[in-house]
Length: 128
Image (tube, rainbow, N blue to C red):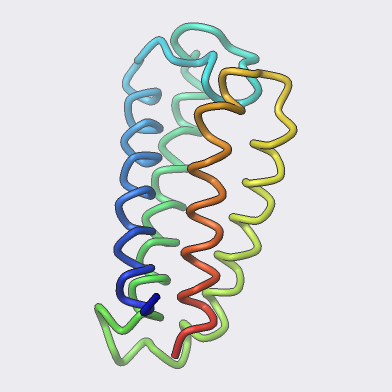
């Protein structure tokens, strides 16, 4: 699979996660599907801010992967060679946490997404 295809898959799944986090930040009652299901229902204000921070981190991760795949900002390619491994590491931790979460619903929904994000970012990192 080419880096561009892997980055596109990555971007699509990343958008789903970012929109989910944004919905949590805006008060969607889906807390049982995040953070181990520790906060069922809508997030309290502090966790809503944390969800917005996650949206920003996801956006930065997406930018790094897209740069590394050669889809945007080619002048940042040298920097992306190192930064993409930080994204891969972050997503590896995310995949493990989603696989071991005490919430069976969260595990069922987010483990496959986390693994797809990890594998597609790894493909891009190994790409060029």
